[in-house]
Length: 95
Image 1 (cartoon, rainbow, N blue to C red):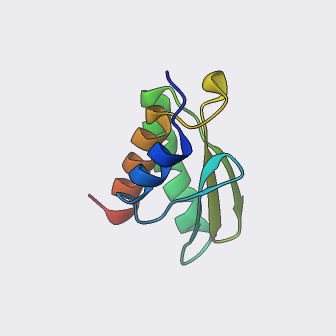
Image 2 (image 1 turned 90 degrees about the horizontal axis):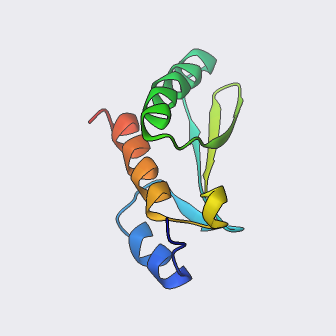
């Protein structure tokens, strides 16, 4: 998978609502009603991440879920990251 340039990353970010590019990763931080809702969302995302064979770096503190995406093999951001980011947005939006 080919590493995207900063220009390509910024162009693709325009198509996403919840993501930013920071310190070489795509990142989002989401707040939910409570811990159960945050953990439930993590579980739903986990199934999709496994299906795509692309696993996020994430953390959960009470009702907050922070997700970081990059492609370690490419040492940067690839289409793989944007595909999973879009899937995560679709899950969050209930699509």
